Length: 87
Image (cartoon, rainbow, N blue to C red; front, side, top):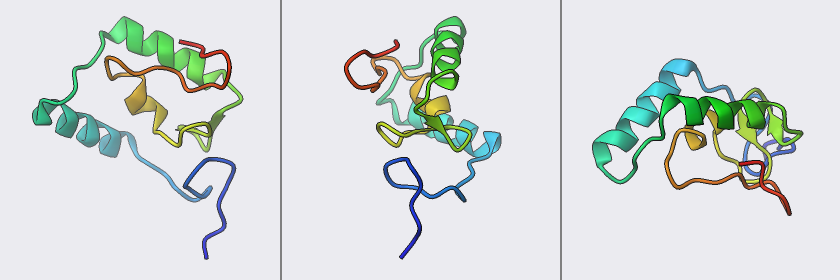
């Protein structure tokens, strides 16, 4: 059984490269199911996430298990921080 870290479904050994993140975003765009926010909004969201105690393992949200660099770019998403979302 894997040793899970403080986030929902992953261990500290998980690493997602910028190239993999870009490929995932392109798949979302091509699927037509998601629209992306503008760069300013994405950067603001990412900055807030990176300053949060829920930002773990260099890019995962411990509250929902998402890859923060993807979630912050998708229109209609929100911050899952309990009780007081940051964006």
